[in-house]
Image (tube, rainbow, N blue to C red; front, top):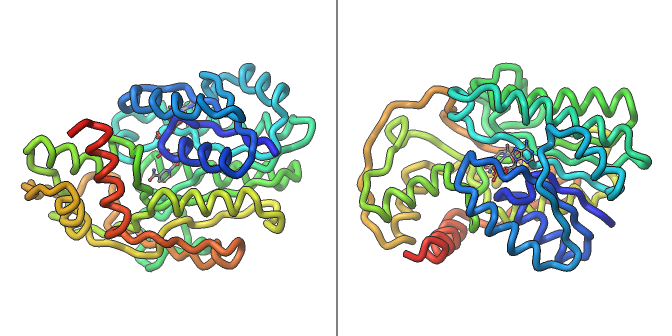
Amino acid sequence: MKLFITGFAGFIGFHAAREFLRRGWEVVGIDNFCDYYDVRLKRDRAAMLAKEPSFSSCELDICDLEGLRRVFAEESPDVVLNLAAQPGVRYSIVHPFVYQKTNLEGFLDILECCRHAKKAPKLVFASSSSVYGGNKKMPFEESDQVDAPVSLYAATKKANELMAHTYSHLYGMQTIGLRFFTVYGPWYRPDMALSLFADAMTHGRPIKVFNNGDMLRDFTFVDDIIDGIVRVVEAQNLPLYDIFNIGNHRSEKLLDVINILADALGIEPKMEMLPMQPGDVYATYASIEKLSKAVGYEPKTTIREGIPVFAKWYKEYHKL
Ligand SMILES: NC(=O)c1ccc[n+]([C@@H]2O[C@H](COP(=O)([O-])OP(=O)(O)OC[C@H]3O[C@@H](n4cnc5c(N)ncnc54)[C@H](O)[C@@H]3O)[C@@H](O)[C@H]2O)c1
């Protein structure tokens, strides 16, 4: 079986590629290596994958429709895992057009290529917990209203879900969206809170704690996310179109997360308390019942287990 991963050099894409290769899949990856964050990290992830005999890749933008058509024609993937996106809630407030380009236009290119493929592949794509906006009902369920996004990033992810639904309906293609809840682990993104905290702590700077630390996040260890992705990709019994939360079903206090990280790094943290940032939400908390019933998803890693694994990788990678 052949899997086509977009955004393979990204945090989740890299882990997904490694696991599917381990499971005997042939994996083809594309990535545009954009400089949203340190490109060296993306190149290092790509270099590790390049050693695998069943892996091949090319540098390609999902907005390059002709290039994408070529890859689809040459590779005929059984499954497409679309992870390429412009991520980040705060960045979307200052750089809206890159979200329009990659997350909307690029996603439409993926849908079109799937639709016109000789044998339409199953499409599994990344959505986000941010589609829940300021949802007050906890935990967040897939049946909750998600019509009030509070960032453009969230709006593009919700748009992806609607676009995929349309293509499933019109062309009988299978499309499954996964709403990821704050993923973390080794090879982590440097723009995410845990990385920013680790960077500040290890350089003796105060960490910026928004909403005075009064925030809750469903932190999901990357191995659990990958386990969920594998189950969805390999499942034979899913409907033509569906959306699933993929989180940890534990909503953690930000201050607890900071203290566990500080312990793991062996550092006394200095904190700068700041107000809530525009586009941020107070809490995320995933109901995972739907994914659990559909494919037996069961996350295993608590933050007390997962954060030290991240901290160990962080120190090794940055030679601290
Ligand atoms: N990490 C999380 O906590 C989280 C939470 C919710 C949703 N998501 C979603 O999961 C997916 C993967 O996230 P990640 O954390 O691995 O992010 P990431 O930025 O590490 O990975 C995305 C990859 O896509 C590539 N890319 C960006 N634009 C591209 C384009 N136009 N063409 C080709 N490649 C392009 C980037 O170079 C990057 O390597 C994204 O869709 C993101 O929105 C992630």
